[in-house]
Length: 215
Image (cartoon, rainbow, N blue to C red):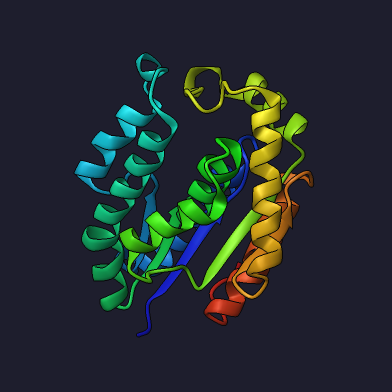
């Protein structure tokens, strides 16, 4: 069996994690251990430790480049401990965020330069990239409003950035969409959740035909 690597991306409040959970709920009984569900930063014990550092409110003084390098470090560990072995074993990987998040948040949002962030992540990943990225798009104002309404107990250091930061993040994502149209597929995340899930299923069926035919 061929392995597949699919990443789920989007600005804060796009609802990608809710869609991911719904898809996993349908596929897990069928695929069992063949389905690997992971996240970034995280997915590995060391990467999860770095996640806690990155999102801790006590670290508000973290330098922007330090932040970008920590994300890349967590990603490197994730690649070698989870992604590469899973692909070699023919598994289907769903990852909640990957490289595009760093390019959008640190390259665009933090204004470190999208190419500069690509470069450090190219070193970290050594060419391990998703064959498909589902990008859930939502206007920044809508996303921030959703966070305020539904995620008060999970708001992190990046969620609390100014609206201008979130605008830069979204625009960076849209530039990535223009650069990599074969890999990144846009889904309108302002639609009702069931329609967003249906759009995601349609795209996933292209990766492995029949994956959702019975659902």
